Image (cartoon, rainbow, N blue to C red; front, side):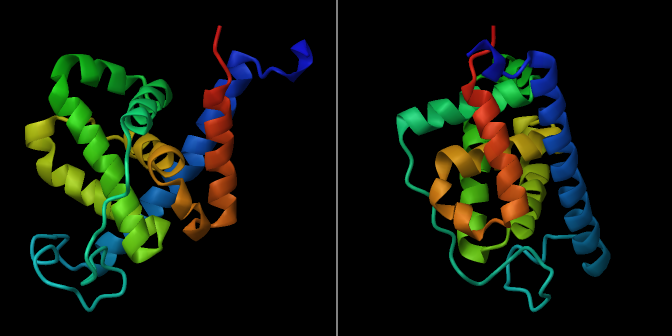
Length: 184
């Protein structure tokens, strides 16, 4: 039975690999979106539906996922384990941090539900977070966004896993399984 446990260093290696792959996907999506949006300004895209197919906006309404106190608590616990900077952020910013993280996780689920595209959902959350960062002080790192998005999928909106490409879903499930193993 002792042979089935993943060592902490190996677990960190897998986590680093999963986050690096997710980082590549986010950066590619952001680059493609930014290169086709002209000036890079999103203010006009947030008020009117866009005809640009690469734009992260849509005329369909957003629907928040059903949540529970237990699911929210699990999400907040896991997200700080994956990105330790978020533990400091939560301690420093208190309820603002908790609301910000839950809002971003819920927003990811809402965008994913509406658009059925993980890259669009990730870009939409990053764009929105960047707009409110002066008030929330959320760390604007790829690790943070990947942690929020991945863990939102497995804890806040697991019913949407079917719209995520299998290669991405496999990495996200692996991360979730590693979080389920108690660390000593």
